Length: 318
Image 1 (cartoon, rainbow, N blue to C red):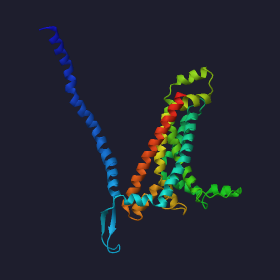
Image 2 (image 1 turned 60 degrees about the horizontal axis):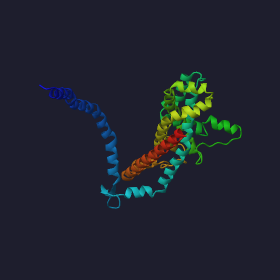
Image 3 (image 1 turned 180 degrees about the vertical axis):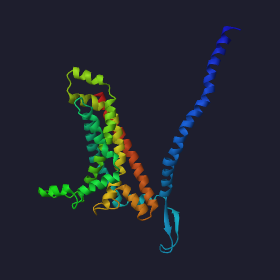
Image 4 (image 1 turned 90 degrees about the vertical axis):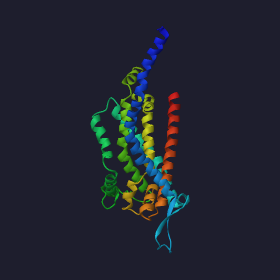
């Protein structure tokens, strides 16, 4: 037997095991992915598909509304009705204004707290880390009820204290109730975002800080030129989560709706969908609002991600 056939036989022998292991490895991977795939289809894709189907139909009644209800195809009429509703558009504008103001404030506070806890001079960092995170552990409904006691004029020591010094405060008026909600959301979520940013900060090699200190950099310059650029991906992540959460604003206005007339039943798009479904039994219009809200959330998250990547890329290149 010549050397060439022997080499070919050896190569074939070495290549055979991977070809036999391939299908088994693929089956093992599919076995691990199958539970996630089933849950993803059942809990994510099917609800979206059902909402899309529901948004194309409406309930019609014959006999001046006293006849039996029947489902008829409505096409895009539910979308037209939602987009032509002034209160729905006002709710969209309201949450956009809410996000433009509240999200930067919340992420700025989270970044400052993370930088303070990551600094060398931080005292009792574990205690303060837990203290800042604690509001996130309180359910949103409970947190809103707690703050409502501080907003209501009849029960609030804060309102009474401000009144004693001549300041008349009404946290539930039409001009301030949106920012009262922003305060609750900021109080609840700042600690959570701080933990994400702090985890990114603690993953940065300490040698970078030591080298900067040897070069004479101050703590401020280290934070601005080293820490913040290196945690930019964490800031983008928390920003996307905050944009999604802003458009889904529901718990805080829903709780305050029962306490003040300045919060209407369709104060936010999510409340408008809830009111259409369970207030007027117009499930088609509620589904159309939900689909529009999902599309707006996806578009805004994509735009925010693209702008963040461009900004961080330009800052890293400068």
